[in-house]
Amino acid sequence: MVDPILSVRGVAKHFGGLKAVNDVSFDVLPQQIFGIAGPNGSGKSTLFNVMTKVPFGPTKGEVRLNGKSIMGLSAHRIALAGIARTFQRENVFASLSAIDNVVVAVESHLPNAPFAEQIERAEEALNLVGFPANMHNSPAGSLPIFYRKQLMIASALALQPKVLLLDEPASSLTGPEIERMKQIILRVRDNGMTVVLIEHVLGLLMEVSDQLLVLDQGVMIGKGDPITVTRDPIVIEAYLGVAHE
Ligand SMILES: Nc1ncnc2c1ncn2[C@@H]1O[C@H](COP(=O)(O)OP(=O)(O)OP(=O)(O)O)[C@@H](O)[C@H]1O
Image 1 (cartoon, rainbow, N blue to C red):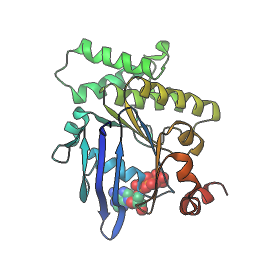
Image 2: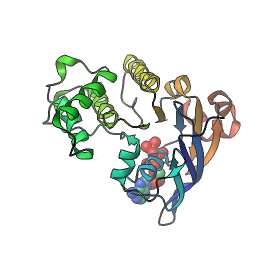
Image 3: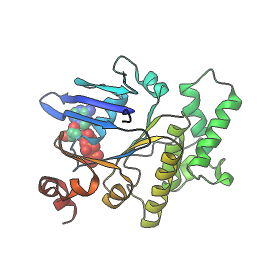
């Protein structure tokens, strides 16, 4: 049996009386694409926050990477240990060039790496997401949304993570762009990484996910193979029914 690369055990995050994430546990196997769905405010992004400690850790519970707890690590160390993430909003440095955005991400985590290595990592990551070579020097702020999303993913990939957490990479994209995003996610997996994918675009989630977890009000209401999970009446009522209205 294959050991999980990522284990989340009894994780909770409380904001005062609000249980934004409430006793969530799951395992992700190496090179899986693990999907997370749920209505707005169900705790998906908070789950990523507590897994990466950006900006806060959990109230309770434990996250393990390759069997080793990461709870004692800082956000910086968690990223170096191999968990990198993106955010719902593509937060690029608008005045920097595309490639400098990725180099800055590398530099902030590996300040002692030689500049040539920082550039090499940035170029590799940009190639992996298919960012056009002739746009490496374009100011990031001038780029259309798809390219800014590519940059944000490349910035995470340049850390050469074992596990990539993607928070709604398909939001605000057109149909053809969602298809291109799907190819990027599959390519990342095919390059040996494990992907945890939060997404509201259910078509994408269903097409790429090996396993699917559904949250509702911080609680896990479904977990398993995507087809079985999305046929569960509890999941349909809490989420899919609403989504298909
Ligand atoms: N820093 C915070 N302080 C207080 N409450 C918070 C904080 N961050 C999130 N919440 C609350 O926790 C709950 C879960 O929010 P979260 O952003 O994780 O949901 P989500 O499933 O990612 O939603 P969406 O799909 O809209 O992105 C919400 O009720 C939200 O208002």
